[in-house]
Length: 356
Image 1: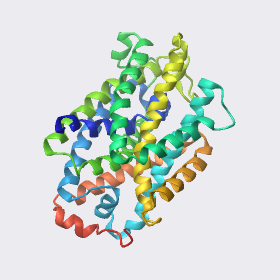
Image 2: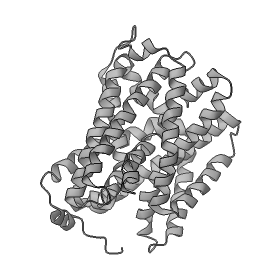
Image 3: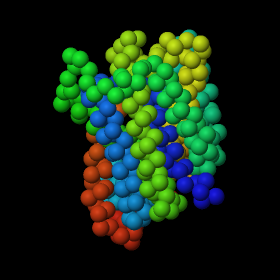
Image 4: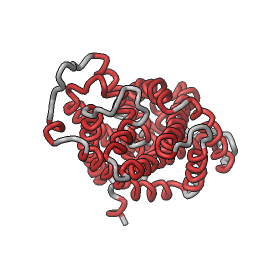
């Protein structure tokens, strides 16, 4: 059983990262468009940051007694805990809403369903049912879906580009601008920030030897996937800056039902991210519903659905960068405060809430 569990947290991290924004290519276009001339190096930098920070965060969490987002905030910002917990949950709600909006955008492209959000409502019901299964339900869903997502995205991306294009280090008449570098760094910070819930939660059960295995898996899975997807998007003639789902547009161009298949793949990516964002939201909402999970789920579902009405591209372009800034801020403070913290000291900094 331990062997089977070894890479489940790495899969969970990838499931959080590969949401609608990544699988559709919208996030790549938004955050890496300004560094497309040097995309290979930024893809490598991103993968290194994910792998290294995964190992550091889980290790520090184990050492400092951090076992979830609440205790993470308690260690990081003990004097302003309530306000920062609310901020964290607001960011997770934005992610949750963004994924539901992504389902609507997907339904519009693949099925022509525009006005009534039928598919997103059905997806929301499935998320509620899975969350009732607890963390094991989330792990099982990720173990099944993440390998399918990674392989499918690699095949479709590689099928649309030639091998020399993947190794191409520069793009004619395009230069990397400082603004592009900043946006790429914001994307890295955003994904690390949004994965804090699964990383700190996993620190409770992960053995020390499994931390490096999962960190290595995160690096090895991220680099080729990000490189292939980004190269496919930046070398495609059917992708515009306004594309809601550029990689899906590429898949549709390949013909032969590839577009429909990849639409299902993107839905799987959305589903895994909805699950990983729903768990911390429901746990937080439970503090105000006297541990009534059904009420907490209802609150999360209603708020997420209402916020999703802003639309997919608008949420990704306007709200996601805020989470990137927050991600680097919290990570730097957490690493500073846990450099010598013992488990006992961490518990002093983050006592259990009175109403738990």
